[in-house]
Length: 308
Image (cartoon, rainbow, N blue to C red; front, side, top):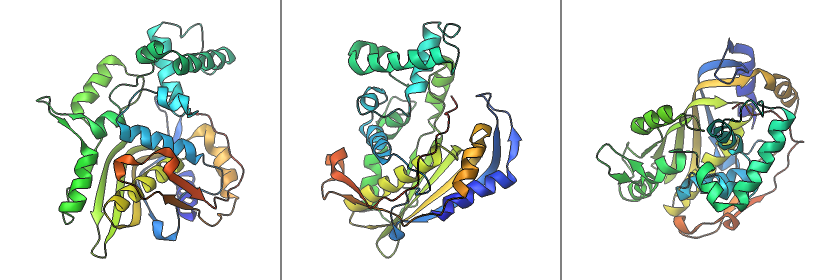
């Protein structure tokens, strides 16, 4: 995963200092592209531990069409907790009582998450993130109310029209974006704006993601692993060999409170890539237990705060 370390180095050396909506501040480069060849191994960062179980649960959550964090919470995946919690604080007007990132905020968030896990009615009210990825991928709504399953469309097109240049899934639904803005939704507009499949002449399959905004320290290792897994799933369903995951980023940024940790990561040497095995089942029948990550050797975790 030298390519990922090169991306970190590029942004640290060339990033411009920006203020941002979180108040943390970033170093940012506009317009980067990194290519990962899955024939060389599964592209999971090895210079720190990346919790692949969380990556996989999140991807399967997206693919199910779900937008409520309850499934994630019940599987000990914490990626989206703070978004839902912040929306809860705003909805109940508790921001002053629980200042962001204070000890009281953290303790109360743990109580919130436990209640989402155990109280279905509470989860229905406060666990939903709005029209995020699951909805856009599986239940895209057009202006006329038509619903489109973009993932099924991808599978059909790869199988039946592999020369098409239109095998695309879009997360950027302008109508839903306006809803998010009006409602001050708990989650930001989709960062994973669009992804595009390409069938090679040698029966290979590529996937390119355009990501409008990418947190290099925390988010990007998840993004690489998630879309590489999706590429493998689609390739298996369509009897193709997964080849390249191409990660194109608009605003590639490093939060200022991640700089020290990422400099530490740059001192580490990448290890041999692991492999990912997927059970030989139809795409829509695949469950969490059908994936097996093998030979994942990694350095120690590096903790970085999430900016909400």
